[in-house]
Length: 326
Image 1 (tube, rainbow, N blue to C red):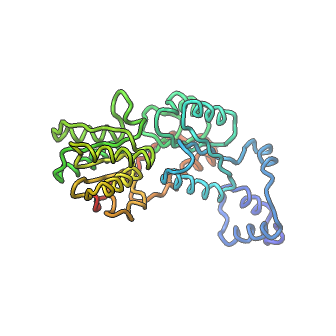
Image 2: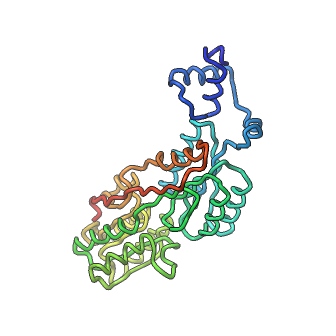
Image 3: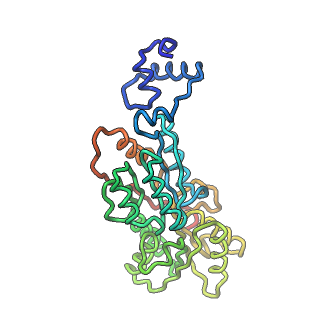
């Protein structure tokens, strides 16, 4: 292969192993073209034994499919992993049993590192802290405090959610309903998006609270919005904890013969592309661009470091995007 590509054996090794060494783009292309021409496939089992590495990354999510931000995160991870010679193993954590099973699998050495984005209470703090204490390179997307030994990626969801509710209040809305995820609504104390909702109402002296679950899937959101908007004292605004739920609320209002935003203003969370094709377009809070290469890069920094890196924390900015639904 080295002869066919007209490079040294060491250069072939650098390119095919995914090691972060300076190799010119044209040289890398010649090596990869030669590998394809010769039908070369790396022996991952032999490589793992030799390097004491699996060349695998663990991706831990709350569900398998249906969440646009998870799909973008997975895509960016797969693309960067492919470029570095890694494969990706995805673990779904949708209950406590699955959470413990995922931690056991990662502790057992199935992967060289993990990228974790689990919402709700299933993956408890002590499970994450215990996994990080093993030295496994980890990046965790979480707003929980006290995680050590890993990189943490946070989002200002409380502040952004409060801004969304204040936007509705500024538009004259007074009966603002919050449609949340189950893990947000059924807690002793409000956190996250629900905390942003209650904080904004308290700040402006609005006493009325209309809090309901329904944001976990499109059907539940449609049914919940239909119930809310059919009540004698229907809300004049809905702040939904996901864009998918907000879009279902727009459909429910339409089917009840109500106008958006005339009869009811609607704001979601996430800024997914689908919000651009609703009628009217969906107002939302979330990132302006869905690009997780910076987050994925944190993990590969850890994997390729000669010595353990100190824990890092980044905050991904969120913005209120005002559109036609509010």
